[in-house]
Length: 251
Ligand code: 1GP
Image (cartoon, rainbow, N blue to C red; front, side, top):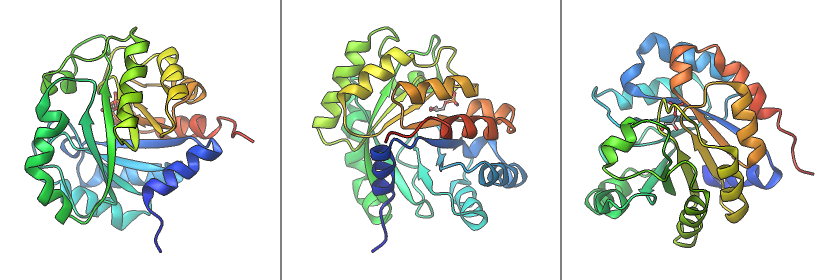
């Protein structure tokens, strides 16, 4: 039987292997740049592609994913900003509930409306507790979600939110400072949250260099997501991937 992607993610966590996900916003790529990103990612042993964005203005999500899947074997996980961002060509869907906010639409409302459509997609669904952390300035996700982010120094709130998410059945916790965040999430917050949950922890938002990615992993992140910095300089893929994969594996 084919192993689920979630199974692979948890196996990696158990052995302490860290992973790198390149975030692709379908609005910000074209046929040529997808080819380049895929080639650089294959060469750098990138673990996952996350595809999605808070706003997807263009309508080429399917084409974008099909192009990636034809070119490589790196799994594609949908990271949807709205229920319309579902593509059957992906490998799995991060089924996000914005547990850091108090906007019922993003906690459960949109899920109810889109449930039959999501189920019909046949995608592997991975329930994900999504937590937006204040990144120093309003980001697209903090504006669009119409929900206050968790203040960046309130480590205990982040910890309790992640714990509650896990006990509610979330299979992943994703802490995000928002794309292009001025201030990425602190290692102190990452360490505290990771010590209090068993499920894999994804960290993203404002990570622009290999050292930060490495420190985030040492603090307890299992998957590092980078989008914005790679859009500006795709050669960073190799540096980031090497740093993330160089974190010592637990014996
Ligand atoms: C945003 O976590 C992702 O949702 C990645 O953020 O684009 O700042 O790398 P960046």
